Length: 67
Image (cartoon, rainbow, N blue to C red; front, side, top):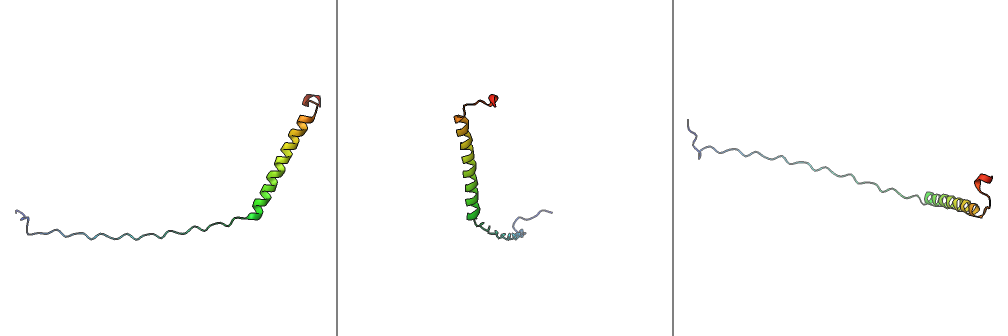
């Protein structure tokens, strides 16, 4: 049998719609000011210690081998 091109029409497939996923909003973290202050104080202390060590090293006449 020979198919006649004009008679049979192909059925169109319906496309399924994809559901969009809702994006979750990220909660912003509140910054802790108190903690930041504490950290700053710690840094300052450490810096001061380092500076003091350097100063004492520069001022001291003794070499470490003499101690």
